[in-house]
Length: 447
Image 1 (tube, helix red, strand yellow):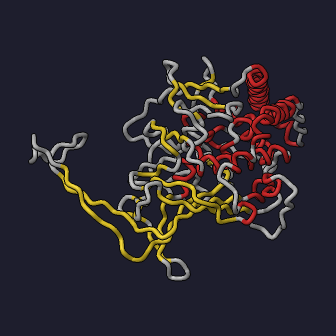
Image 2 (image 1 turned 90 degrees about the vertical axis):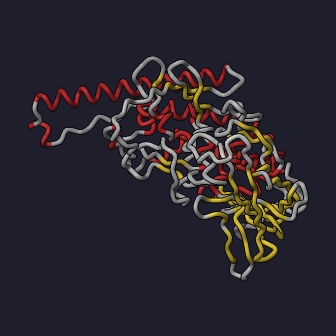
Image 3 (image 1 turned 180 degrees about the vertical axis):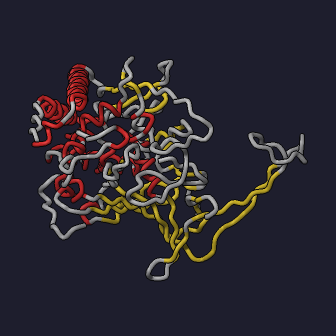
């Protein structure tokens, strides 16, 4: 943590908010008492085993990308909705043409920056969610070439908080525009590491017997024939879950203090729910398991906090209790953000001043400018209507307001790629600027 000394008379939330950086460490142990565990594995690489500065052998048990999945999973129901107690939060739902839900901003790896969300159409119109979002943020230029104004970050933060607040914690990146600044690095980082008992590893094999067609060749989309495969496990000495909170980055978001504290409280709740083994929904398998049920031979449980000092001796659910006042107060905070956005839209934009060259503009040029101005005014009216609708829903519905979009797959030629979107599966460099992309346990991870 930073050198700031916590005031023990403050709430846990306020004590952590007073820091610039918080690192929460928790000791974990296998639920079944096994001496070995199954770590995360990567295609063509296997487990990530390395030596630390002191020569100790360590292993990455769960990657940062997979932990982002799991911290989001504890907030979800099996339909991609917000779980209790966060049902007052907004939800963006993607439907197919038949009206069936196919995704939400919680299930999508890129959250609000998902191409399926951005390309989704609002109602029966041809207006896409991207049209609405770009206008609300104040993007300049044509949609594919749009740029964020130099002073546009404040509006971006406010709009994302209103529509998808969790994205500010886990990060997002809009790849649908050539402007590279449309991204948010993670504020909440997490991983699980283990110190190993030594250099020895545990390897054993397994055999699949086929008594019907034992000589059947390997066939795509089938599981005939006999096969032999290996299992890789490591012998653990201690297992530590590490959660890093960049509180300084949080404080620099263009939100008011209560909204920033809410995001910190949401992060603490996610950590507490994970360590408390809350149900966690995996949208890939459509399965709900305990959050600490990582793999077949990696079912863990919380043992104790080992840092920071103000958490030592506390229980895992103390982090959940730190957010109880925020749960009831979020609706008000969210409405404040939405009303602030509405107020921004109500402001009349300044008229552009006439330049000396204006007299030489052709009649066609003037017509184009008037048409563009009319289109801008229509876009603002659409956004204001959408914002007003969200405000009414949030006031009258006990659940959070929903934005519904319809995604219609485009017709593509065989040679057409996926440039400018984030639809296809793939592997990216797991850097801070590539939020929630990676792999775990043989390419199972999609966040």
